[in-house]
Image (tube, rainbow, N blue to C red; front, side, top):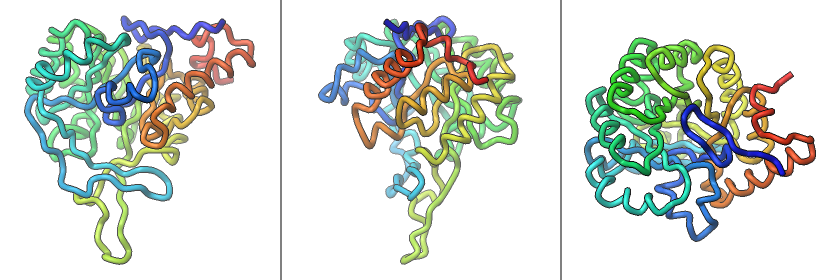
Length: 302
């Protein structure tokens, strides 16, 4: 039997399959499709200090090469999360990871501090890379100084596993990764979506209300893979890879490039059970290749 257990710093995963924030709701919405406790973990949709309505519609669109979104971190805020969402998440028997976002360092610190009090939230993913908000978001993740400052501030109040989600919309992602590592991050996840746009040629107007949004899906996989490989060579903390992973072959590529675990995002909108398909495909690949432990694949590119 193949050992699929991995460690992301202090976080133990029964297998390396995670769901990407914003693509899997709060997890329990998918319980009718499969037993979600089979996953290594669920990264739930973003939580901010305050209630947010998100951006105006239309804020999602399909392109011929992937999906555009500009949801804008819609959520009901940390108080609602603690009182109404968290009691349901406590019943799920796997790692529950909260995605923490905000417009200012202070607001991110506030959410992280509240999450630290919740026993069944085993880690947070600090989102310094959302391209779809006017303040904060990607702005934190495009400067080594700002990345360091926000990570350092959150580190001071959050005691459990701190994952920092990086933006691909930078010149040198390895430098950003090194800055958050030096600020106390336990691991990084990369990449978030690429800033992109689409135009309706009949109306000659942008399809999204925000004009630009984040591109995800198969089109970004080769670029995300390159960035995981670059960051793997630059830092010592574990990497969680994501970006256009649609099947188990894609996942294996990310492990070979240096990822210790992977997140599945856009594929959830096409097939709600895709994460289980990827998990089964990963087992089959290891058995055929004579791999006894999934960790043998991490950084194994020759």
